[in-house]
Image (cartoon, rainbow over all chains, first blue to last red; front, side, top):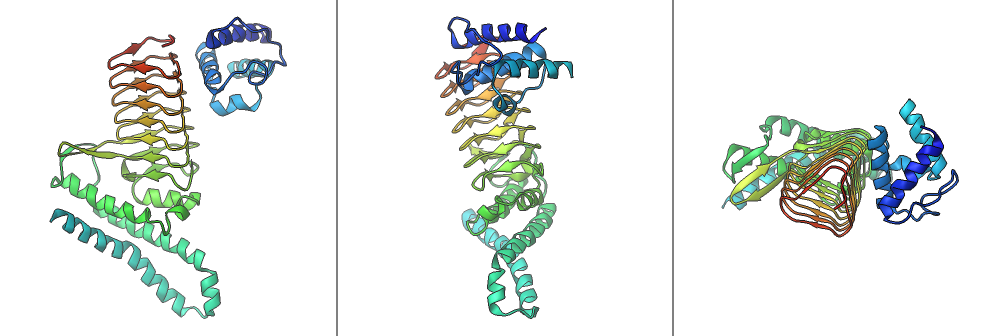
Length: 81
Length: 266
């Protein structure tokens, strides 16, 4: 799994969560400011990441840097740890 | 008559728990060669020492009173009810306004006071000064958890002439936002978060990494599996089961007995 593939997966999940078309996201897309995700949507996204990749991802960890590329890299790093 | 008896016992416990450390401090202070202004200036320190002394006495008393066991007991004459009444009278002393905010403003003091009454609480949990832990000997709070302003955790209730005692377990890294209420028998798994004003009624079981929004009412016996997300102002009636990874939309009402399947949205 690459960062780009994971970002595409996240875009599909965000579409499912917000019940809209999949957004176009780049590494610099900010999940709250650019896509308007609220705490509930972030919690749902975190739950999907935890279940799909079997990683530990606490609520506070998602709030530190919410750019899509950073988040995808964080998930992959944790999965490989 | 029983009320009068209980008040009398509570008064005696108050005299023992508060009076003994006060008398010891009075002896100590009168023997110190300090001017009166210095004694007044150090008053906050005396208050701190007083609470520590009270905790030591509470610890001894709690060791003498039979341990509380989870269960349902005829109220108020069953031996477990008497134990509970005595322990309750002692813990009420620590909730007096004189020192209650002080206790919960210092991590060390809070830990010592709660541990002296039998609570299994982590040293590094975080709490607001106005949170309230009733029935400490039935409460477990693991490390890195946070109990915010106005949170109430309680290990008992009285219903139909029975005293019901049940443990409350708060896992590692749990976040309880303001005004959350946890009733007896509630268990919250590691990494979960409960939003402001949410009430969890008796025997609700919450898995790991669950997000519960603000203003929810979760009724007795509800089972919530890992990684569930529950929106704001959701009402979940008794006996509902929510399987892993399910999502409950904001404002939803789940009738009694509903089963929300794994990974679905309700």
